[in-house]
Length: 138
Image (spheres, rainbow, N blue to C red):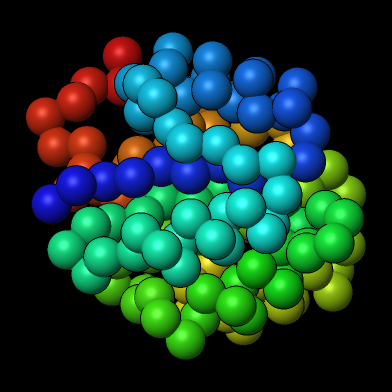
């Protein structure tokens, strides 16, 4: 099974920093990144395969297509068996936290910045552990 890690955020600095944190934690060496919900949706629509797994870090607040709209658009063709979404935001809005908890694709709500330590903790989540078997966080 192929695991695709995807960053979706309109902030290129966040993408650059998150890539570095992923690499230093051995979470993923080369995640795909998209600076808009539209381009990420287009990729998913054309390339989604039930044989692959998708770990998605999704910004909530983006112009044109926000994170919630992206989730609504992919929901008809992805499954919670192979698509794991982490909502990322710089603001802590109780409504967003509640909304994330109601969506079956959302694994966790994360506050920015997402640090190396956070990625090490995410690797320990039961849904992600199979992808990191044999890796040590030390």
